[in-house]
Image (cartoon, rainbow, N blue to C red; front, top):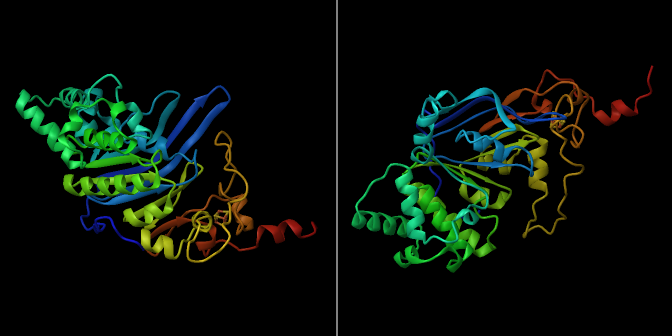
Length: 347
Ligand code: SF4
């Protein structure tokens, strides 16, 4: 593994910074409820880097938006708890939740750099954000704080005087990261923070984000598609499919020995510069979440499906370094392959 980022921290502190329990989020539509997030449970330790991967539309962004209680209609949180540092944020009054955002949990949303105000200098945008969250400083202290925040993301002080159109994509993303981490949150959520950048800039921005996370002492949830990037940055990885979390584990075990067929398929679709193997695309399409398939939601696309997969939802089972939801790991399920069952003559 080509390791150039600060080494991942080992999660040893027992009390998680984030604990998600049985979270269910629907989008209510005239045609019925879109089951965007279904019974998701996991936790993140202080200072840990947790990666979340899965195909577009699998519910990653819907899930993390709920961690800031920013789910907007027609999205509705139907069930579950989100404990941030032990406090259920779904039960907090609105004004208290406003205080928690940014100071305890900060989001770097997808396309964050496009959210900068084009007619305001960087300095004024950072100052506005600080004031909006109750940071009152005199002019000299404010200037010093803004320069300190820019230096943290490796930008020179002169950037404070510039407008967003005078910055490159990478510089804009750095400004967004400086703003998101200005109040030293305990949890940073970065939703595909490098997707709009070229490969070289992606690497530099990711390295800088990892450094800032270390400096602030926060945990990081990194959402993305780039498994190679995940392998270099995160401690643990969660794989989402069709609104469900199907496997969680430490990143080394997940890459060496993925236990869920969907994780195996995701890794099998990666190009390998060493082995000149053909990339295997995952056949079929993810299901419409307005009517997901019964049993295991992956069964219509799973090359390893057995009869139980189309009838019974798999339960969570322990693996080396984590857990996965798959009947193949379950000794209580008979293992007749689906193809053989379909081919057998009916009595
Ligand atoms: Fe495939 Fe069945 Fe496992 Fe689902 S439960 S991933 S369909 S083998």
